[in-house]
Length: 120
Image (cartoon, rainbow, N blue to C red; front, side, top):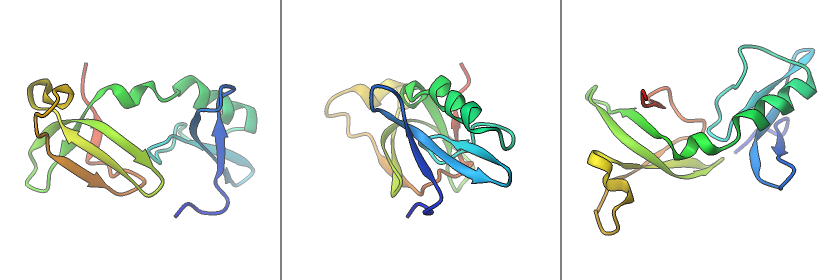
């Protein structure tokens, strides 16, 4: 459940791109995965710009998920909500193959540090 102080931010086309969270005298932009976008608090307009500049395109990128045994597995983000994030394993690009039987893994929101963007 999101804290009541989190204010949803949508792009002009209505797509939700994150939240703006009061933080002291400023605001902290938070992406759709629940991660801070800036290093510290910024003013309201900077928070909006940071979220709009980030967008949601990064959700389509490949990510790495560090498993409990320390092994990192390539994954793709499948579903995102404030209730949790679902990723699917993407061994050899299998996440996009229909019927591949990729493993689905449910993560809490905000996502843990174990999920990170894969190097390009």
